Amino acid sequence: MTADTSPSRVHAPTPGAPSSDDLTDTAMPADQLAPAVATVPPVPPVPADPGTPVAATAGRRAPVKLILLLGAMSALGALTTDMYLPSLPEVVTDLAAGTASVQFTITATLIGGALGQLLIGPLSDRYGRRLPVLVGLVVHVVASLLCLLVADVAPLIVLRTIQGMGNAAAGVVAVAVIRDRLSGAEASAVLSRLMLVIGIAPLLAPTIGGIIASIWDWKMVFAALALYGVILFFIVARFLPESLPKELRSTSTRAVMGSYGVLLKDRQFVALALLPGLGMAALFAYVSGSPFVIREGYGLSEHQFSLLFAVNGIGLVLGAQVNAALVRRFAPIRIMRLALPIATFFAVVLLVVGVTGFGGLVGLCIPLWLMLAVNSLVPPNASALALTRHGERAGAAAAMIGCAQSGVAGLVAPLVGMLGGTAAAMSIVIVAAMLASLAVLAFGTPAYRRGGWTA
Image (tube, rainbow, N blue to C red; front, side):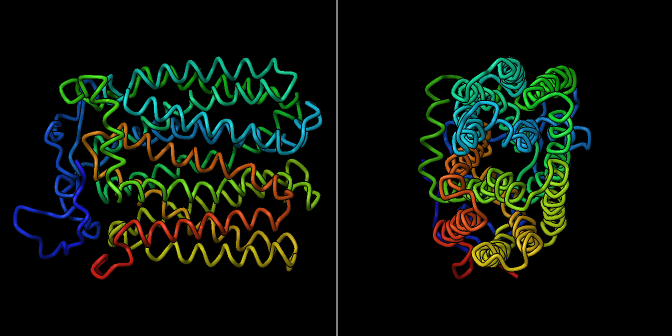
């Protein structure tokens, strides 16, 4: 069934027929925002006892311990990418491979994550949230250990793809658990708080990875990732509550696979799901290009590069926390309407600096930091609104959002190297991603239509 996409005003709804297209009122009940699906019952509130399954309504807050656990799960993918970044030039030398080929090991992880989320998301709707995470963590650990044995870039690419598929389970289930418990502005606020935990990964991972590589070599980074996976496995097994009761799970393979058909027919959901992916594309243009653009281009050491990477990570964390405060007062669609054009402006400034070289490294880093910080307001709001439309199939919805993030970012990541690996190349890719985001927001959502937001 296709969601109603006709625009309407939240403050004067038609009795009995609320429009799912109006995303502007943070107080609007989640069951009015989600499209009606005759074959799937709504999620009722149940006790929040950690020992029993829970499926909370929109007004409930997630416990801090649960947010930290979900953050540790979500950070697995970022750690897998960022701990490896400072060593990219050494990998090029050690494996006698080209820059683009080594950058593709990052892309492979993202593509694996996209494929894994498409598979795991619907399965988590059928078998619950815990089992897919545990299986995915085992896959991650095995793939990480096998990376220690590679002597060529081709098997490394394959193993990184498998590693990404394992990581996907932790990431997609973390988002689905949030939607099981919360919706709307509350979900957006929790997703922003989750970004604080996830933000620690880019702050610390390159430094940790650089230290490990300097003491041993770059392959030992994968030993550390395997150890993290083992620790996370036991923590999840012990502390992650099952948030999807058996009576609310999909009961057939046909229903599981049919979830994507319903989601793809919802034009506004697709637009909202694409926005985090395009934001991630801009981020990964920086992530994949910075070891060559910043470290080699400006002659930074591994330690200096790691510190600079951490400073930019602070921008991501601050932006996420500002958003968590803003969603208490303003509708998520309103925040995106303002944040995205501002972030695009900073991206254009970055392009000018990248092409002209004005200001050197400092001139490049200032608009880059501002763009990353402001753009970090978009993904949690877009994700929360997309999930609110399809809470009854949160696993599949979270999988599509995650697939868009990993898939789009994976396709974009090698472009910086293919375009020459320069500051101008990185800036061009970032500007293209931001302009695409602005177009999706403008034409795929009511953000810029009359009545599409309220003061």
